Length: 201
Image 1 (tube, rainbow, N blue to C red):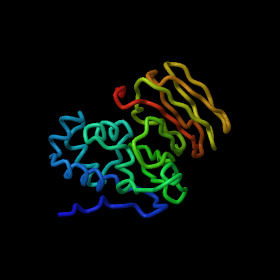
Image 2: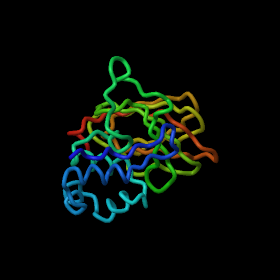
Image 3: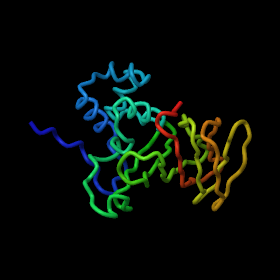
Image 4: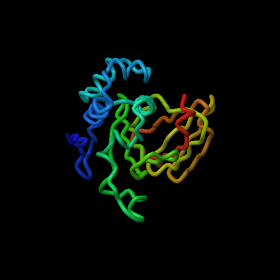
């Protein structure tokens, strides 16, 4: 019997239905919420809330879940990877960018990497005024970015610096780090990270 397709977001949708995709993938693996929770080191209650779209997971939680389920991060953000041919396989069209909220502070991310499993990922991150990013994914690798609009404070290993539009940065991702929007307007940053899956903390 043919399995139903993972629910797909409408092109250009404001928010991706991560919960439905997570539930579909978990059931396709014949796993209970309790089993997934134990293997991913995420509480069963948190997974249940994510599946019912009652809470927005952090990228760190999504990474823990995807590693156990053996799927790329984009599997939570869109339907199964389309079998595109030629150069289209490597392209993410603007109208097809998955958009999703992470954590509880109103931070929104827009995936720019094309579908599939990639060690290098990049995205736009929109950070509301006065908000500090939630749990950051750490591990052996590097992170980098450039401020597109607004102002941000970059905190790395106990030090901090103010970033203005056009300022760029790059650092080893095992260092404790965070981003704070210290201003009274939304900020957007182009965020790039390379953290091989086996090195996630």
